[in-house]
Image (cartoon, rainbow, N blue to C red; front, side):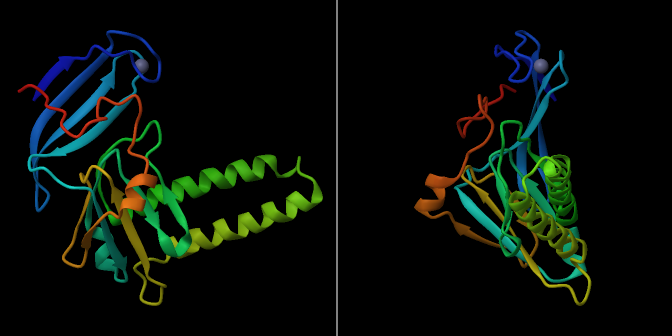
Length: 213
Ligand SMILES: [Zn+2]
């Protein structure tokens, strides 16, 4: 475990001299040896975790069809530069300004999708009364779509559920689905051009952050 102060202002509260970087080498089965790096701000509590594999990784896409309950337990390493999508539902979560890496399983990733959907739902409900009639019809349609997304995700793993595909797109190649049925491919040039690469201003803006040991 290595701890050091970082000479950048906190991206959230802008205070200088409060951001620390903690890093340690860790081993995740199949993902291999990597450095786990966490930035945290003593002032406002902001934190961001990322995973830097020891071996260089190239930009890549991982995908797996979730068609069995067992696949919900597959481990997922999602770095802060990774976009996660469910193409069948036409929903994706981009690495926003506050993106943080995490190690979870497929079920945990679905939970995060549900959180996002509920948040959009709450926003819709909050504004629906102020809408004109024609806008309200559209909002009602959106609500129905969100409802269907929640159902589809909630039924995953059940024998009669429609399978969904989980896709990770990571320009930095630091993300992975750890399951024998998961497949990896290169990102296309179009994807590379279109994908956001993650938090900004980034200590992780380059691929080779080398925390001093
Ligand atoms: Zn802060």
